[in-house]
Length: 245
Image (cartoon, rainbow, N blue to C red; front, side, top):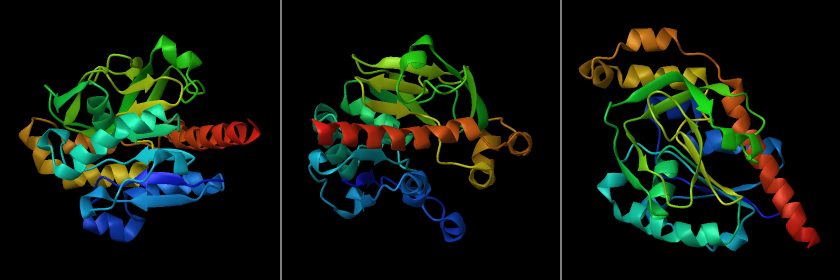
């Protein structure tokens, strides 16, 4: 089977990476459980983005950068994404990847009017999620980890809204049958989420938020972590179907 392409769009904090690995490692684990190989490219260091048809699936990681910075590597990745969507390869963008995907397909991204959403939060699925290949196995309300100050302000024209919460109206969307963007972090666990709250505590305080309260509310999020497991299943199913046709 072809490998899954992980497009690495950022790095986590140095100390956390030493203990737990970096973004690409957090995404790789559920793929490896499904016996899927991965190939990591990092456009920030000048890696060329390969033809999407060479891969069974594509993942876009998060980043500490901002889509509105319009870094050259980010613009190049955005220009590559519409072709990847047209290729029909299962594609999932998370946080920055979700925002970049939305911008590349005609949506808009900017600073969230309410500032940083961080911590373990409730996500509510929309009716369309009941028939969505990626999210249909989730309950109507899901605990998930969030860490973002920018957001998808308007969805792409052809997007179907799949999930939201009181803070962010666009926590998940789909384009067609095999392209998704999700704002929350299925790759985070409780330890990673707590590390982010501690690292950004001064920013949270400056916005009038209470990092100690957020830390006490951190929980494991087994349902949201199933999203990556389900994405791996979709990759295998799609690849098997392509091999038979």
